[in-house]
Image 1 (tube, helix red, strand yellow):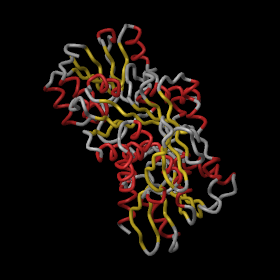
Image 2: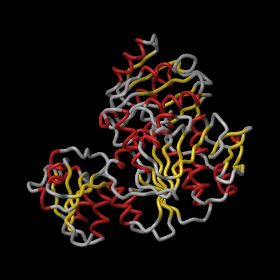
Image 3: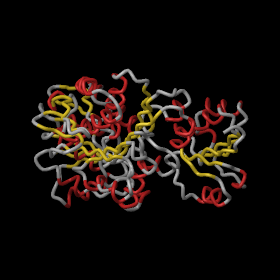
Image 4: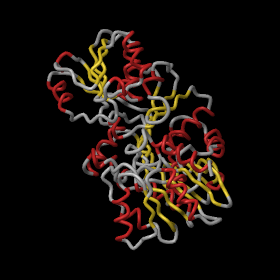
Length: 451
């Protein structure tokens, strides 16, 4: 990278990490963002100025032919005009994930899918740590992966949550174990069709070789069929919570088990020993068991780590309980399928807080799981009118419109009875009102704890 002319586009968490890593490697770095300098982290800008970095903030470079490489942050569409100009002029277009892969000495374990990525990635990270491996967990969660890639050694395991946006801009990225957990409509505002969305997700295994593994959910045809459709060369390891398999991870007689390549049945732990609730979390646990077993971790370590795992913040997280009413933070439920799984895990007497940024989803299937479970719906954000219309069309009318999270929690508390669950599971992204889903979940927790 030394003296290579690199333009890093998008000064969020990912872009700042990429720019910092490139400066450290001696590249001739420029940074760009549509935001002006006053809206960018000031300490970071000071650091960049002292390193001689050229800034294009609130504007784009006039001559895109001067750059050898463009590094795109995940939120930046590769189809922007000035990016296309650079590509035409001969620049290589990559993302922060690809950059991290090139800078890293360790081996990658990569996990994607529409839902369950954060829980599964965190669980896999805990299992590898329990095995004694030097483990870094990052990517779409925690630190931007370029931050940690620089510090990884030859034996480091990089357990990485990978989004479709990150996979759009890979080139050589090749994990030793990959996983696609499921595939349901999401980010249609960017990917347009499910076929496009699936094709991007399948890029996680496009560079893998036959001696590597790809873990796939055989209960989810949309994701499982990607292996054949997109030409997966890695050994496919299926997992299933519904049926017994000849090879892979599955549930049998209340136990999580793995059948290996020799046909041996390996016991991991009991399903009821998991601390994370819901059938979707059983799927996450099965995927994690397969990833780690075929990634070289011994079964006993996998089982003990899985039994000790308490779950992750913002994913069906119990915040507090007051007068018999539980407040559950599922801010990570950023699409309809994730929110459906949270509703099903809670079962009944739910006062649901939903709404947020519109990713182009439809809400009919989401509303269809309400009967017998959701008693009140409280809506906020840009999608509130759209969800309200879908609910009313389905005959659900117990709806309150709220201006912000404080109003949502106050309205929920007013309607709640002992035994009820106030569930924040928005079925939408957070970007209309918050910087990210973590900020939204933290605000919900704070409002609930103030009661």
